[in-house]
Length: 262
View 1: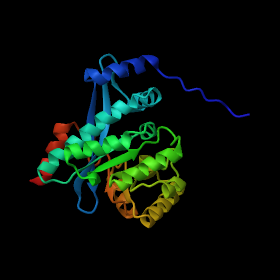
View 2: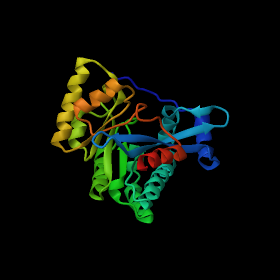
View 3: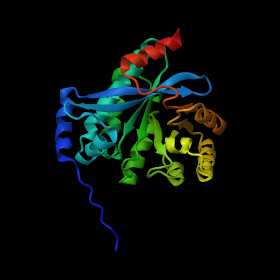
View 4: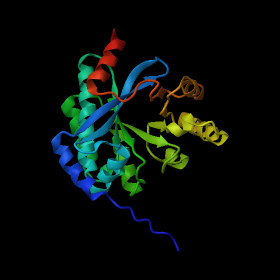
């Protein structure tokens, strides 16, 4: 007999999250990605943050799960998408190519209008589809895999990048990496930071498969010079983590890019 797992939701937090969307409590931060070939900042992951008036900063792992369970993840996703597109459009006007990656839940992918909305927003901003990367989050399983794969294929057909996020520790596996229409794989920080021989085998298999499929590989959670060198030795294309920069508010991120242009 199998076990039934009951997941409880913090109803008070869920109610507060609904009001937070109109109260200005939600905001975006941007974590830079460094290209290992050019050693320059080429992209940013757009991350949602919530400053609760009483609880202070609510950990994303707490409120994202609530947002997915209640459906408010759709509004959060649109908000972060707008921040990402604004970033790309701003720097595009200055002739600086910058990409933005936005986390997307399987809940969003199965609502039927997500891809259309994305394409409409790209057209409104006059932005190249290749400047946007959709990251599939692993906080939930893919759910209706047939629908999800179909929507991901639509994204790829439109030229939008698709990244498999937190690879190696969540629901994703090498089988999914082979089957899903992705253009990028993001190695979870635990893989990069681990010294286990078993982890090394996973990394080597992942890199081999990524090269066979011509996928870009991003190492997450790079915090030390040793981890940086490991990412280089593995053949990763980009890195992301505190060694490059912590997530930054928009003014600080813009200032970082301006320094690179000088």
